[in-house]
Length: 351
Image (cartoon, rainbow, N blue to C red; front, side, top):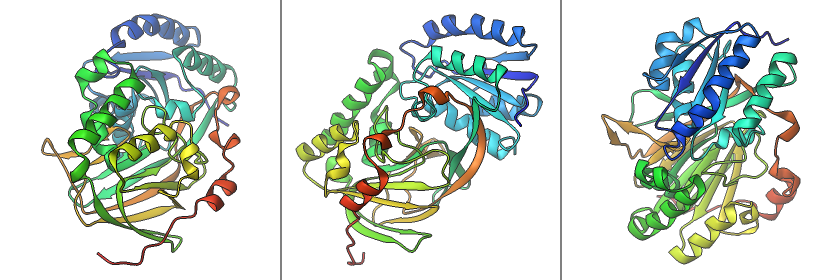
């Protein structure tokens, strides 16, 4: 039985979705505070500290955290919660302020109104409008700490796209359009530096070796401003899902990525899929790495690891969700059909 917390920490991240952030704040803050007050819940509003620092300073006093921010802000909030041991007993909710919001999409929330609906449902039926979801943990050989995320870790093309989706671009372009613009910009400027040989092994004994231009390990169906790299992935099944793309010419690659938005890329022979609870990934040449849209850095500089270990943390976090609008791409792409039609091709050549 889920208990309704009596105190809430509201964290506003003005860097999330800068194009409409201030406008969204005006729309959300007063109605949210009114809703909390009507349900006898005390709250603290925090906009001076970034989500990671806010959790580190105040997280112990507030078991319920509401984020007014996007996926990158959520990644840092979750990072702080896990490091402080607050994720097991904590609860989160998120309003759609960012340019991507893939975690929200996996939880059936596509608008600010949806989050309000989910919160009202939670205050009347907490067991029906909350659930425990998985997290992913990544040990990166170039950093000294474990990185945590909610829906995806990406290497190569996906990380370079995240790197080039600049704050200025997000400020002037809608989320998905900004992401697509960064895709084409990356293909023009970074294409020849992305090719590398990759070796993947899973805890289930499966292996993949190939020359790839992009690789993602997903914890849910959505990643990259609404793309569906692995349409049958679930955020609460205790399994991570790998998606890799072969090296190919830029024009063909752009067409493949367009198909990732509707999930039809699963029919293509250039796409690889593997499932598992943990992955060990080795790169012949180091690649940029991103988690939940945030490029991983050390000392302010992006890292390019040669080895990464990724594992799932089952049911590691409680969140508010909207069961009546939860969207599943598996309705169009049944998992077994997709996997059988597109089994990974094994390349036994060594580095």
